[in-house]
Length: 343
Image (tube, rainbow, N blue to C red; front, side, top):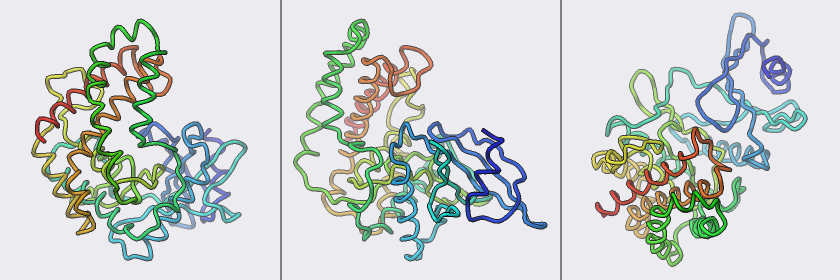
């Protein structure tokens, strides 16, 4: 792969000779490299990625979303760094090489990411950045975005897929998962509200984990919202909910230390305050009323997805052992129970 990168880079509208490429291991979807080009005495860093077309079936639609939203923000005096892809020499936002799709972004220096939330300050800053991002896209026509993963947050569909898996899944796994299956069946009531309410359709990020925010190494401030492949039209309840799901527990979704899977209230308060502040008055009354519900619904949906995959024999999520998706399901059920108790 590395030997073809100089050729790929020459297909973009950037200046300089190839110096080196270093793989970036963070992230599990796309193949990512930090590349250096040199023009005279000046060296410039870029981020080069090969898009995973198994996940994103229409990569040019992904790039249209990212580019159009980025150009929109650039006209709005958006206060943070904006990820706008470089164009290819044929004026596309990606280079097509056989069946591979490559894209190039500027490298934002003096930044870092966190894989977990350690302080309330981090939770507030990240949530503020995600809220601010949605705020500045408030008057962007959400329905003009391509749906890069159709039905991504269709919880009712996820529930139907779960029901089918309980009937058609691997027999021995159904026995091991009986308790988790029963619990998820009991949480079916969580689908009622999302079916009944009319919520604003917004440009949503759909992967609001803290490692999708770049932070300044010097002052710790949020600098840039990244990983924009799942920009799609949806309700912001899921963006808020994914922050609750990933910011608040002291251990991540792979932990089987279930006694330590709970909502850290200080993180929940900080992220809620930060998100509302970032939205700067754009949150409607019904959205604000249902934020906590959005957390419950998102965790419920993720538990459904983990257990469905377990029952189907681990065909979607990467696993280290045959029980990992069941562990992830039980983990999310503990988190859901904790959040419901706080409601």
